[in-house]
Image (cartoon, rainbow, N blue to C red; front, side, top):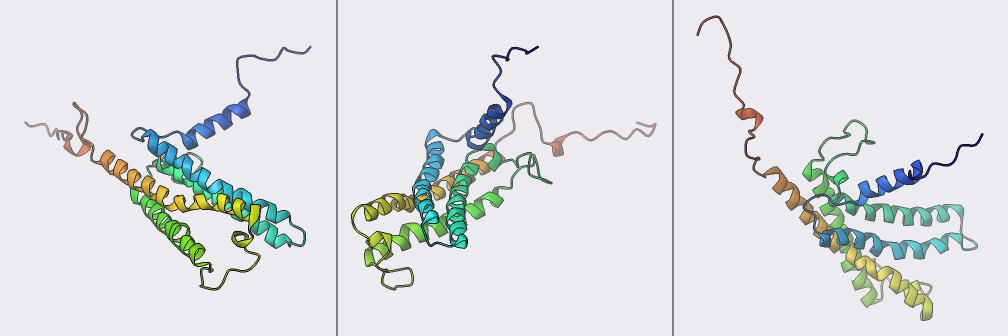
Length: 215
């Protein structure tokens, strides 16, 4: 006897994926829509260059090591870009349940601000400053002339496609800096927020009387 399929309840797997998506992307209270869109903008700014690299991994004559490097570089780039959501979502303020030892604990503010600040500075220097200078000067980072097979010097559609995919990376560092500053301000404001009426800190709680039999 075959039971009729249940209706009205979504399958368990899509429901888990939807909950995971919401947990990873939903902003906490105090995050403006502009900051929410900024986090999405970071991921979208990195995505074109990550996709542009993938066909290289399937070129003829490329070794297995180079294939793994290209694919890993694209995956790692997107993973790093996704960490921007930690500056607006709950998992950037409270360790998720799947993190051992510290699950459910509050993320120290500086434990997020310091790495994000260093990352924003390095990305800004690499993609916003150094890359623009080398492109204008027509040299590599070390100051050497660009090779003839460099995609940015290929001309035609190949060069146009390369520049379209890589130009958005100039925004990665500055956008991450904006989120980092906003994150730090929001966390500090929450720490110094006054208590609600009718509540008092634990240190102000009355001490129990020591009953010794005498008043």
